[in-house]
Image (cartoon, rainbow, N blue to C red; front, side, top):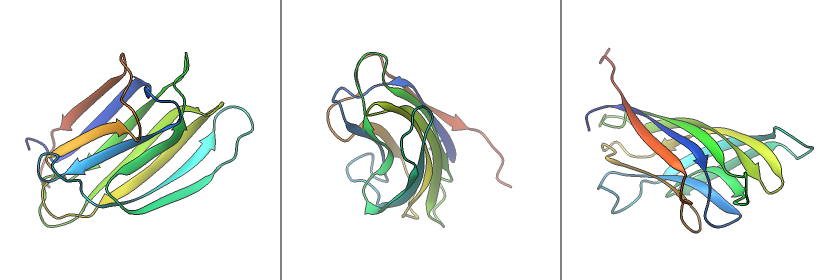
Length: 150
């Protein structure tokens, strides 16, 4: 609660289970329940000849960052996610991100954002995968951004 804005950074983040989806959840009650979100993302290959496009998730209890991530040797990825106004109680909360990782056999970059549909203060953020755990050695950090109120 010391800051309104936050940055979450993941380096060399690998799912313990192959084919997992990268997710972030938010909560107003210290993680007991998750805030409903609407999110959208674009995806583009950064190597090879994979497809590109857009995806939208409506009324979910998570923000999906990336899909079908690999966990073989030298796989995994990195991300940066920005969260805005989490302590304000007069409007919904927003975030944006960029995630680059191995999707199946190709390298991809996802970019997107989300509306966390609550006017209550968010006091809990969690990075996780849709199945399994975050593999040992993965690094995720959360930083508060000090700023002015004008």
